[in-house]
Amino acid sequence: MKASLIYMYNANKKQIFISLLSFIFIVAVAFVSMGNYIKQESGEVRQMIIIALVFLVYMIFAAVVFLQAISAFGKMTENTLFRLTPISGKKIVLAILSYAAISLMCFEVIGTIFVYSISMKVIKGTELYGMLFTESTIELDIVKQVFSSVLYVFNLSSILLVLLFIVSGVKVFSLKKKKMEYVIIFFLFLLVTKAINMIYEMLGRLAPTSTFIRKLVYIDESVDINLILYPESLMNLYSIAFSIGIFVLLVYITGRIIDKKLEV
Image (cartoon, rainbow, N blue to C red; front, side, top):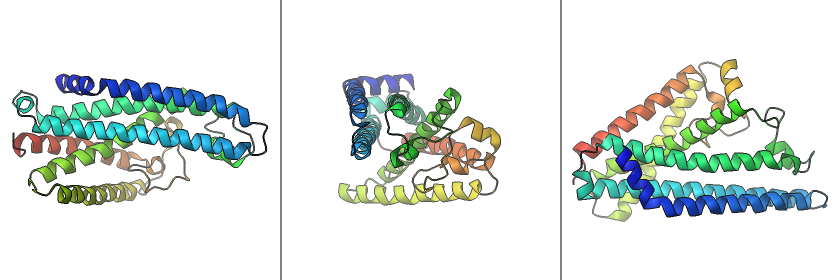
């Protein structure tokens, strides 16, 4: 796995540093700009626009990480010399997921620092302030924030894993029409993620979220459970075991497909 991870880093290190430095610069400019609108009548609207732009940039960089991961997956599974090395399919998958998780965690840390740093600059009593901060989030709880960030990155990594699984599965059939292949991947991705989300939701409703979990993770009950793969509002022993089990299973199956089914 180390060799695959080094390969991904060397192939994307320029994009990684440019993306991180760009995001840090944008966040810094946004932070300074937030303070300029505290006393203005239209301050809330302008602050909301700034935060929306930062969030949009964050999503763009997250999408870039996904594209880099998918691109690396294609190169590592189709490159004859790379496939002739003793690196197994499972290690390839784990390396890609590790790369994505590390990259996403870097952006998550920067984004979290930004959110907490603007707590004194967002106009209090406004709808924006109510959206961003509650009694449970306004005071920084390091343990809660760490677990919440890890959970968020696990969510995104699980989505990426589903995509890798579907891409490898579709490639087995070696479709001649690439456009058709992309369409099939898209619809299968929606189908599989929806099925996983529904099972997770069903298990999540079997028992309430325990007090222990609530002490470890920020839980926003207002978030639509269909927006993310594993919503924290439905976390319990059953749903957690399911999400981890699915992750391990998909890593194993995808690795087997790469080793046994994909042509070198």
